Length: 168
Image (tube, rainbow, N blue to C red; front, top):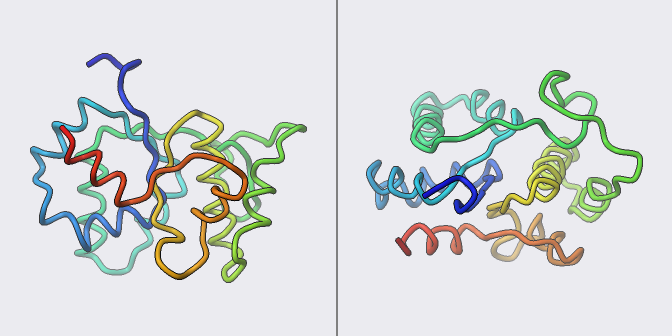
């Protein structure tokens, strides 16, 4: 399948953990590689940094294995946030960009640094027409999924992504 016909995905960091915790035993490396032909997986330095900073060595190695299995392409974030962004790996926000602020302002605000990262990842996916896959907001807690619903922006839940994987 050529690149223009492949689905484009970006995982929120929580989805990597969910794949290890709940689904990695059900997905073989072969299955992941088959889907690699159907999709391009993008990442920003934010997800990579969060994974590299996980203290549990075994868990971190599993997450890095997922990154290696999927042929991911690192792209710059669609904005720069002090204390989070790496200068060489981000763009500056355009003067007319309101998306990041809209997402950030509507997040629950329990952890501002995390909310900034979530908003930056979501903004980057949306600005690049990449489907964001997130589990943030599933269940009874408010999160990124609720925010994206309220501002009418597309995303894919973890469950929807797993169904997509199984639908070879």
